[in-house]
Image 1 (spheres, rainbow, N blue to C red):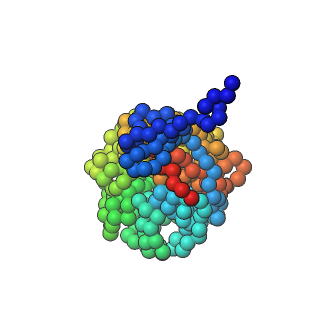
Image 2 (cartoon, one colour):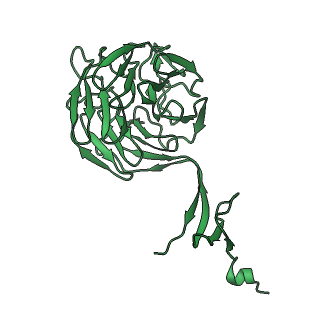
Image 3 (cartoon, rainbow, N blue to C red):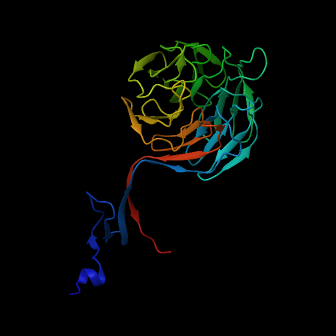
Length: 323
């Protein structure tokens, strides 16, 4: 026997407002706003994005997942700068000095800082710092200690650079015009990851000292470093972004083996997330724990230009509109 459900489907519930305690796929009519609404959710995942124009490793970045900036890099000490709009990369004005192993940071696509790094020659270490204003790079005051494989966090007016070559524990802060030596990291290391919103709030994690990959995480409060919970997988050439209370760390290698690990930090502990699709180290992460991208790096067998976009689990109410 035919039923109403079989012939007509289910009815849509009418409510004065939005439903609570929703389940995925639930649909209702909001009589107050006179709109049909639905509830959707999704799992944390990596999706393929548009490729970089220039494949490279040891890249640095700034901005967000849908308005990102990537600059510098290895495989020839790159000076290329590219912007990401959420689907594709566009080439912009080059750095004044191409280099690899620099530190990089910036809150937006139009304001970034690139510091230190290396070039061919003897000595190969550089103290150069440059700022990006959305259209060009300008050389500013040098860091006090020339180095490569360091990390940086913050903005063009308030930043911090730490760690680097020769297992250094050196820390320097930037106020928009000059660098000042600050208290050292608890664990000197290079090829480490970093995140932070300013020169007074940052974090350092991973890296290498001597022959060993490190799992230590340290938080900077503007005056000193404090060791907190370790990352779950010790690794080198790990990269990340975010803040001292909400950061993401991706890729790297365990001295001998490239990894696809991804972890997020909630201010207290690190949590393993779904791996990036390709085991890669020394790329760049731009964004937050809920929306980020990973681009470039050393993939098995070659330097890559691949981009992967990260989206954290989500739950949201959507409104249907006519088209």
